[in-house]
Image 1 (cartoon, rainbow, N blue to C red):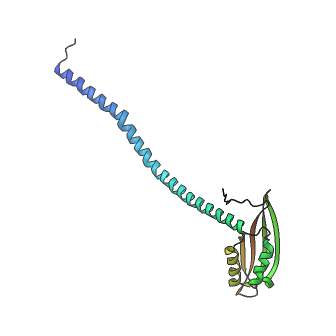
Image 2 (image 1 turned 180 degrees about the horizontal axis):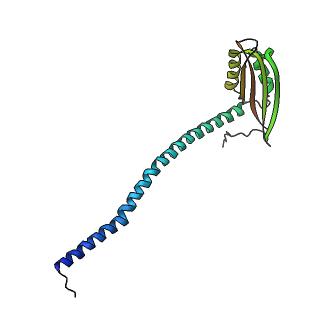
Length: 186
């Protein structure tokens, strides 16, 4: 065996300790620091994505509830319901029938078993209160109808009156409704 002097042994021990420290840094410390930097960058991104997902989840739940409300309204509605005569009745009720310039129903066939009636109503010289009451009644009615679009402009003859064009949509199913709540008795 080679005999090393005390100085050579200390030098060998120092070099071994130095190489061990550098190896530990290269294998453990440096990758850990890089991983921490990556996580510090990713965590805010993932938290942002989580908040977006939570918002979309709330929106999804709201849409599901709206869809269930729609289904309940559709099930409760008379199968022979027609939107145009219903709107004519509401217009008379709110005293807007004399202000109707044009009223045109149109049926859009969206799918083979589903269509939508769109009634476009042009009103001239109505008070804003009458118009809002009419639209509010449509939105709160127990029938499947909703306001699709609403355009309003100042009436040129009077500052207290407005002209408006309203599109009201009413879905219709072409097939017979299916009973979902059936009780079975033994």
